Length: 92
Image (tube, rainbow, N blue to C red; front, side, top):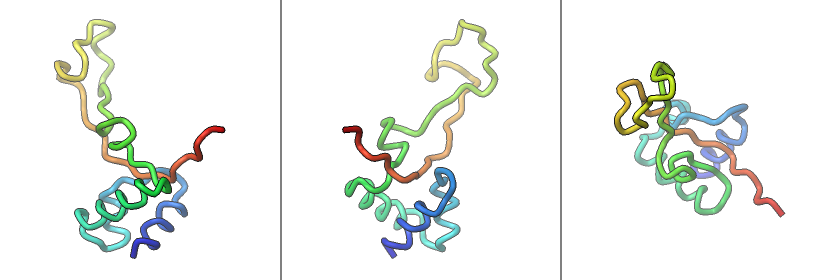
């Protein structure tokens, strides 16, 4: 099953949402998370939560026009879904 997870991500044309991958492979999300972390530790996959320390938080409206208090205080931010992708090779 570990290889199925790796191949599903490698065959995708874009990063995959963890929930979508769970549905595609018919694997419980918590079990899939462990498999993904295995491949992240091996350097084969990248998890945006691991790379950035947390899933991306973005402004939904850009309505603050320069006076934004930041993600902690802005009422217009939202947490983006956790995405999994093939790891980029390390630069030489």
